[in-house]
Image (cartoon, rainbow, N blue to C red; front, side, top):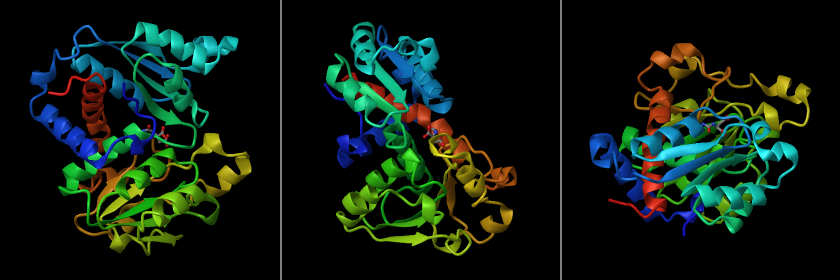
Length: 305
Ligand code: NCD
């Protein structure tokens, strides 16, 4: 039985295969319409979500399966004091695969140790978000036709932004990918990413504070939200929240074939005027999230076509 807790649980070959299956689903969704008939996905969300939960549920429905679950900790027995382990042990009797999001780093790993069915990490605190990364990789592949030989700028809250950590872990395994890490000094990527991912894998990277002066170098610009809910105090959040705002003036500094990505939700960090620029890929990215999750469910249920 396979789980997806960390993006490194998948080999590059498996990621490439998931992307190929997602491309095939996009080309011919009808072929997959009944593949998961009689199967159930449980979505256990102990933290807010729109795209991740709904795209997981839509994914299972479009495979002919069913969904059950909860969308806040308050509506589950966790409000009565039940442990994650007990909740998962029980839900794994009712469902064939579980997608869970939890504010505590490592909760999905704990869950996977007691579950009878595959567990998917749908975001654990400020740590990891592997299915967002699969979405991001499918998007980059569809926008650029490759996952190697490019400069990726990550901008915003690189400290608490879990999507950033998983994306660096994945992209650093492809050939000739260079990172520009654009953030205020307080919100740089955690040391473990620099030490055990970037340095150990011999990746080229640059630490920057200015988005303007990085723009012209980028093939991908990955914007992120300042993660208010993970800050220790509101004053720091208020001070840092508008550090980077991508607007049409900044877009004018970017390459003609730049792709702008964002896991969403956006708050202030991308001006809505940028949405009309063909280089704005973030809504396409949200759409692709459903297809790659369909491919992932197929893989974990052993139903690859
Ligand atoms: C992200 C998350 O939950 O980490 N959202 C998502 O899943 N698309 C990004 C965020 O909340 O800023």
